[in-house]
Image (cartoon, rainbow, N blue to C red; front, side, top):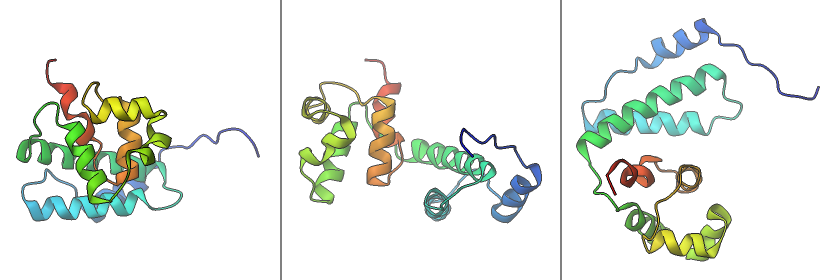
Length: 143
């Protein structure tokens, strides 16, 4: 069968996820770590259901809220964050070209000459397995 399958939302399945995990606003570092671990587990689960996708989105929203309140990242810091992640994994900037498209794009971002676009941030977050907000914090600040 070709074409895109239309997925329907199963309220019972979603309710089961909510009952099982009981998401609530994150208040402590331990709760945040647990939420991140759960989000990672869900992200790497093959063939996620629509309900799991929505639950994951809710979880990420709660994590981002906790982290933005507890670890504000100064504007313009996404370039140094990217550099830090590369250093931690012993990566060369050339290894980011497949993610960002061109060597020029990689250079401009690392030198903080331009902001990381949303689609680039998504690719970087997946690649480094970190929260997308690490690369988008600078966007919310007036330039």
